[in-house]
Length: 211
Image (tube, rainbow, N blue to C red):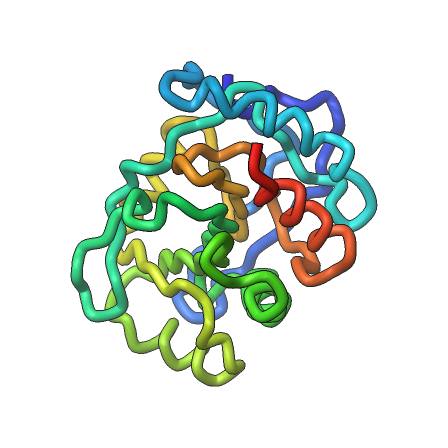
């Protein structure tokens, strides 16, 4: 199972739908139903991230059997089809967010700061928006806070979100995945985090370090 249910109880995070009127609440434990497959070789790297699950990143969950995310079908802001596989070859931090999710909005400047500090040929932050409808609202929000360096991808029909949910990999927003160069999720974190903190930078450095 990619993300083995933890015996630790994670604090419930209520997400209020400010603009669209619907809400989600994080449950206290997470699981998944998937074998390692082509990502089995990434298990040692995932295990090496366990010491980073502390402090601000206490909710970080290294994968027991990394999940393949490379086949996710996404959209560019202009509506063109993109796949996460298009970004293989670099380590990714994939953050699933929505404009109606208050913790997501609070977290976004930290993701932009992480991209500014570590972004380059070997690492990128992917902001994967799941707002249902047109692209204008997420575009306005990202431009308004200056988060223009992120890899901006969209899931306007929530197909990727629902696929990951069916695989037990995501239950609410925000959810963030650490994805290796082969498109394998080697860790996840449910809820917001200060992604530009020293602890987060150390995590990214360890994840991006060549095997």
